[in-house]
Length: 192
Image 1 (tube, one colour):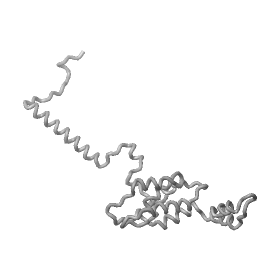
Image 2 (cartoon, one colour):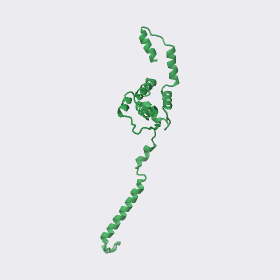
Image 3 (cartoon, rainbow, N blue to C red):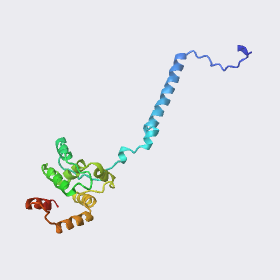
Image 4 (tube, rainbow, N blue to C red):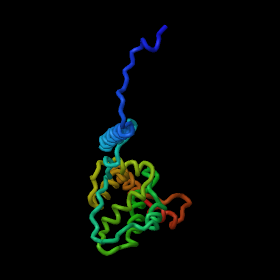
């Protein structure tokens, strides 16, 4: 059995200014905490954040041309207008028809100091969905700087030479179907 007098305790020396000592210790603790915060501000991510990509590392494949107009912005109405007919990249869809409709919509506006390329390149991503949108996101960053470059890449992806050859063959070997009126045959031919 231990008696109190036998235990070895380290005693704190008597300090007549106990309040001043408490303030000093509190100040040291605050300074230490502030130093820890300052060090953490340089990189205040939690472990999970290291597995996620950073916003600064996400870049677009389209480089938007500079705009000379001071107050240029795409109106939400125009964006909604473009989004009404989106291209998904499926084989049954017609990329040429999509481009024609898209260009017609873009030509409804012409702000001063804003090139057609700037409008088209800013709006086109809103006209895509599904695999076509994925294609655009997966293209190398900053690879499209002009509408012409983008236009060619889009058509080479969704209207490849094999599809062109197939349509050319269908046009050259076109015949009017049995029981099909001349008008119906003409409309089918124009569709090709």
